[in-house]
Image 1 (cartoon, rainbow, N blue to C red):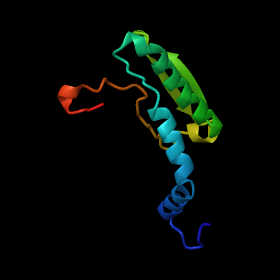
Image 2 (image 1 turned 90 degrees about the horizontal axis):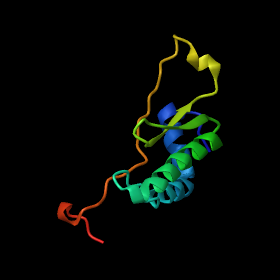
Image 3 (image 1 turned 120 degrees about the horizontal axis):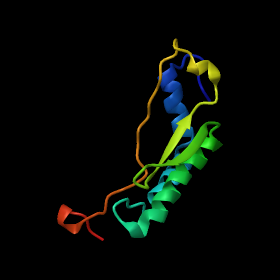
Image 4 (image 1 turned 90 degrees about the vertical axis):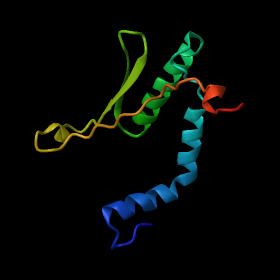
Length: 112
């Protein structure tokens, strides 16, 4: 429950704390997808990770589309459905992340 004197940041942190176990579950779900983009064997997993991101964005009320790059790798493009945010007076927020991973090599210190 948000207090009457909460700042925007404290309200966000409070909400994150309330949803911590659900957030961790979703994070672990996506981490379990072996989306190794340098491996042809894992190309379907890279696609699955892109669709996972799009599905979760849509579940949050956003517009999401999986597009395929000219080299065959997918990207998930997400935007708000709120046309008021398309105004030049409203700043644009770009969030960049990736749903593909590089192989974990033992020579780099990774262990099974």
